[in-house]
Amino acid sequence: MYQFNYSDLFTPEELLVYLRKSRSDDPTLSVEEVLEKHEAMLDEWCERHLGGVVPEENKYREVVSGETIDDRPEIQKVLKKIESPRYKGVLVVEVSRLSRGDLEDAGRLIKLFRYTHTYVITPQKTYDIRDEYDRDMIERELKRGNEYLEYTKKIMNNGRLLSVSQGNYIGSVPPYGFDKTWVQEGRRKCPTLKENKEQADVVRMIFDMYVNKDMGRTSICYALDDMGIKPPKGEFWSPAALKDMLENVHYIGKVKWNWRKTVTIVEDGEIRKTNPKSKVGEYLIYDGKHEGIVSEELFNAAQAKQGRNHRAKANTKVRNPLAGLLFCRCGRGMSLRFYKNKDGSEKAPPRVLCNEQARCHTGSCLYDEMIDRIVAILEQCIEDFELRIKNDEGDSIKLHARLIKNLEKKMKDLQAQELSQWEAQSHPDPAQRMPAEIFKQLNAKLLKEKEEVQQALCKAYESMPDPVDYEEKLLKFKDALSALRDPAVDAQRKNRLLKACIERIDYSREKPERIKSQQVRYYDKELKKTRYKSTLNTGGNWTSPPVELDVKLKV
Image (cartoon, rainbow, N blue to C red):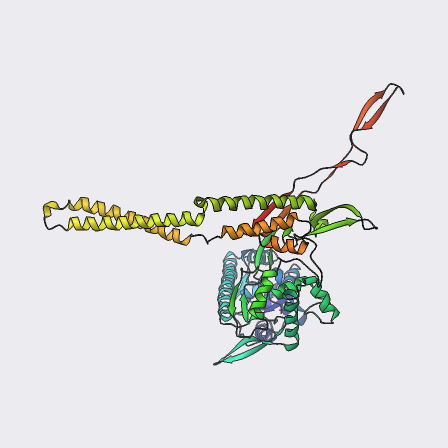
């Protein structure tokens, strides 16, 4: 290890100071207070060893939080500065302040310090990265810092989860309709929510319009804007913001965890971190300390409607029997479009097409063609139900019950056989007993068979299907089929009957393409010259890609 005479190696003007707050620092102190404390320590070291302090323009204070070099703008400035021969060292409180990132960050730092011949100086030790022993020591320090970071994150994450599970609200920004507050529990102050009366009334009105008045999210946005109600962010209300509000469990007195968790992805060879919204059911929900502002019945009704019901405007009847049922392969809903002339006459047959067709480029389909396909599916289901009702052997519940009954009978037979073996083996006359070794083998075989039957019974009980009333299903499907075939039945009734039978229809079709006319050459004897004619009409024809439907039935 080198012995340094610091004044011979560099002057205060040739050093850079880097200051950063760490998780290991006193949590009661602010970032500014910690950096001020560390700056005083480094200034005192410079006064003692160099006879002066580092100039203010050579000091860099990191005030933003970030785990990697790319997340910290001040360390990036320091690394850019050391490319100049003018600067000979970087002064820090400890090596781990430079980075607690992964091995890639550590390698980047070591490479830069090594090939720019830059010293890393701490009050305890000065590292010359060109020396292999110093280089090994600083590698260990950086790695230890990363390990401490991962351990601290794990501990803090467990602490946050524990706090949420106890009903506390640990978010920094309260949901719309609430203010953040603290309640005293013993010696602890616990963060929670309290109702913001003005905003809470808006939340209740949104749920009422969505569920009870059957308004879509877009219609609600327009209504709120017209009433002059300002949204939490931005100038106008958006359907996406309403969707989040309608799914927010805080409104029924709950708290959630991992709703927006950090996910690391690789894109174009680069590692990025994203914070996607978790879907309903993918995050944890606990009872909160706060009171809800919406009833659970109203909230559950909103969840049942989310993404399922048609987007009906207030006081507007449904025109599309497939509203809320038919979805494009891109995930968007599909609409029924009518094409009419100025005089009101039909210009072209109605079609169903994706609401985002301009982006997903899915081909549309004739409405009548779609209805014919759904009619055929309903007819097939009705035929299947009638067959199941006629032939009880096809009833899965009865078959399952028969399987359980057979297994139970087999278990009783095995138990009786086991009892018989033990009675025979306990006969008063030893001559009437079977040899001990044979009895042991038979008994072991019997016990193994009993265990297998018991396991099969447990699985059979667990996998018992729910009872299905095929006669009730048959009536529902027949009603839907009858309504779909009857032009006198309005679209709203058809839609309601179809939703009783169908959960969802996913649609896919490639976009049709125009077939260009083909030119054929021939010799005209009258004109005595070669001419060309088209094999198709001048307007051309279109390809007709097949329509693919994935229908999820309520059976």
